[in-house]
Image (cartoon, rainbow, N blue to C red; front, side, top):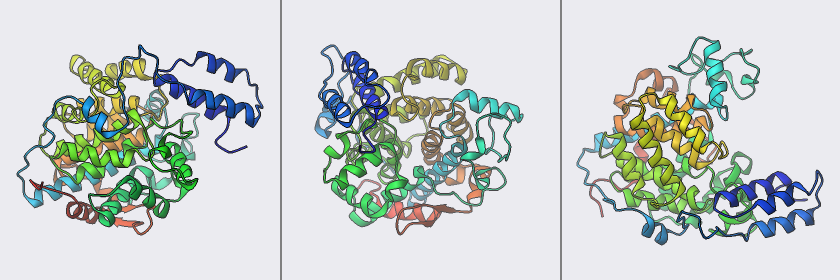
Length: 437
């Protein structure tokens, strides 16, 4: 039996169809009735029925996956904002994005996948709640969850001497390689070829791993994203969009387009929108220091009536109504907690919450994103990137960035040992800046 063909994967596909607006109660009941050891034929037959389900007529969202329809479905927006800053200022902001992303990723890395309460319990047991610095490594942590199983000593406070390899940092490095080798006119097929040549299969996960498998089987985009991929709206694309925003300051539509070309290799619908949203927000972060405005500008590049846009708008409103970020987090988890912990929508809401309560500062942004739980390294990285651009490298507190010693490791072939300052300079050279057409 193929390794992807399991009862667990079938149930994930049924859940995905349900989230997309399909009626699936009968499918779920039949899947439950297959028993503990279904045959390949039984699983394939039910999967085939599942994948042809379409959203019910009363589904209230419009969620296309092709770029022309996405643009037709988006609200009004400026598409491009005049930017008049020096090359040195651009470099400082891009470098801030790289450093802020590394800081947020490093902060969330030890507790990736943990729930909010588990993180609270760990920090409280150590007398360190609320979070104000990197986690400290403990060989015997004070809670039952095996904290140290995923936590290397050099991820902890006082032991960090570089940004170690993490997929949340591999993807901006890979995106830079794409821009340096193919330019801004790259195609989705170029992205596919780069993955196959530059990323080890076992070091990509969920939707990316399925898309990688589909490419090896000969499927081309967009089929590589859709074929037997129950992760197609999960967070994988959302963590790949930073480089395209850094490379296109002020050019919101262009940033979103570059993100689209990347995302549609492995994702559909809200999975695509997540990357487009973050890329556009980053392009906007070069033009304003108003966090709510950055979010609004990002929303102008994705469909107005999709689930992701609704979640973002709700989170912005809740954040404005409630002075306590934890109460807003309660509402997010109550409303969107049914999504998997690695889904785009719930994690994007956490990102927006952290930004709204950050006052535009790095520390409150990344600590709240991580204390919220779920995909902590992804969310910390994303808010760190946005606030890093907003402040520039010179505006970031030393305690969060100096431990890296300007060094970033990655598994991208040819880009394994990097200086963060050099990556920022190369991003500046590879991008389109100022008022270029």
